[in-house]
Image 1 (spheres, rainbow over the protein chains, first blue to last red):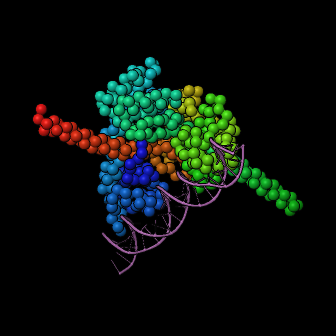
Image 2 (image 1 turned 135 degrees about the horizontal axis):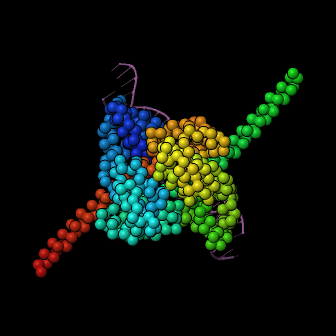
Image 3 (image 1 turned 90 degrees about the horizontal axis):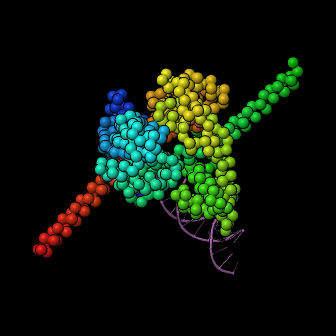
Length: 236
Length: 236
DNA sequence: TAGATTGTTAATCGATTAACAATC
DNA sequence: TAGATTGTTAATCGATTAACAATC
């Protein structure tokens, strides 16, 4: 995907956070909100918020702030959250079933309409109200219902095959949860959540933290010794 | 976490991808690998790979490339992948159970030792060989076993409370899967996977893709009309 | 020697932040 | 009017990329 988008990627990623804060503000009955408050919710400075929102137009009022209802509607529209988006999950293991049942997706317009798997023990079972079908039925269903999105939660060695199958079936957006870089034609949008890779970076931090802790302990225990030394030198 | 790290975040995030490629190369019996090949695996140019690896030292040999075994060992060490890292999952819903059973984590040294939940129907059940305990037992177990990492998969309205509890129990790294910005003291490392927010950005792309498709169809159908017009004007 | 490939320097690119006139 | 807050410009920051001498 060669990204013909009119907004920087980091800005786009923050819009949902602003949106979420706006829903909260609306619920609280607040009619306006400042870039500062939106920034706090997203963990960025107010200037960043204003810059981000400036990509969508002039949405605020100087001296006042942003109209909560208006801005929420603009973001909802810009992100297409009110549009129904059909998806299928391939891989009805733990992760696939968890995503199929994830309660947070519906409010953003995602409808997971079915799961697919090749394990006979899984075929025919349901996840909530969603059925698990054999993978060979994927193409037909995707074409018939014009499904746009495919979610991949199969074991890593099958991920590329499934991606190929999805592309051949006409799926245009792939959300990949397998720990593997997938290859897709340029017109397909591919987004990956590589949890194992993410864990590896956390592992890096845990390791450093452990080291600096040991250092601290060593400093503390020598401080402790010093205290004892002092006690002794005071000779009481 | 004010990030006293000696390597840029984006570089750090790519190291696991290089590592994975190295394991593959080793499996294939390859003894050296070029920055170019590593780059292909991670989707970045060779210069990026060399720059990333230069943060860990001079690891390659000019004219030759990188020793696969040696570089893999260096990365494993740098990322602390061989160190055992104990974790608990709080929230034994679909996602929590999926993560607890996720097969990709063990090879990176993560040991999920228990799950916690407040639902009586879940307490006492197991996920693989891991037991689900009531949340009030979290502090004791974390302290007794010196658990470093907490994984949050509870509903959004409980996420902050659980984070507070984890911090109070001595956990130092939190991996948050709830769609909410959590507040933790500065010495705690907090990393979040906000799947709903990620979905919202995918929604943006799906919406644009749909629009550009409609445009294409419109162009095609007018092209179609033109063909028909021509056919007519040819008068056959 | 010729060819391959590194590590590093410098140039480029893009995002973040600070500052402020304009506006309410 | 005084105070608050926007949108935007310019400065800063940091990461990516290109280029190349050094090395094998």
